[in-house]
Structures are given as C-alpha cells and as structure tokens.
Length: 150
Image: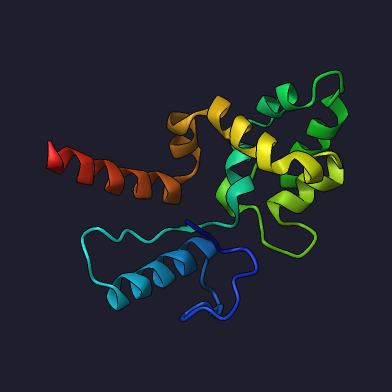
C-alpha cells in the first residue's frame, strides 16, 4: 500500500490533464504490475492517503481522544469535505485528508500512528469498502487469491 498523496519520483506518477485521482492510481498500479508480473504482487495506491479511509465514519475518532469534545471539530471536517467520497478528498498540501484532520484536531498529529489504525479497526473493512471503491476492488482481489487457495 502506497499513498498517492505527494507521490514523488515514482514511474508513471505524473498527473495527466482530466484524469481523476482514482484513474491515476489505477494507471500507476497497472504500470507496477507490468514491471513486476507475478500473481503474488497486487499493487495498491491509496487514493489519496491512509487517512482518507477514516472519513468513512469520522465519529469513530472520538474514542481515540477521551475527555475531548470533538463535536465542533467533526462538524467542521464534514463541512470541509461537503459530502465527498473519502477517496475523492483532494491531495492539496493543506487539504489532504491528514492535513484536514490535524487542522481540526491538532492532537491527531501526535497520535496518528495509534489513533489512525484504531479508528480504522472500529470502522471496519466492510464499511470502508462500501465507501471507498478503489480500496474495495483491491480487497476483492486479495480475497480472490485467498479463495483460490482453499
């Protein structure tokens, strides 16, 4: 898993006019697979970064910040993204998913290595795949490999 956000010095990473971030990620993945053809290599570019997955259910951040009222911060985060699908939250320097989280919940910057995975676990793969189509397709490919082995 590699984040698309701020991807640098990576073959095929250049942006193309009119190309969606999801299409760009798919193009880079196809290039990676072509360079390393193996059924055991399933490249995945996260659109835009890991924190995008947390936008599936921002309320699940609350347990990571006990004693802190996140009501206003979560409302502002929702307003910031105005109904965008998590994978469609842009990758601007100040507007990437993690940058938005840190802007509204500054403590996230210092606990992201713990709070991020814990929040993702509370959200669960089923809800993530429903709201993050690119992520869901990748999970389906992995599950297909597992099913083929049984």
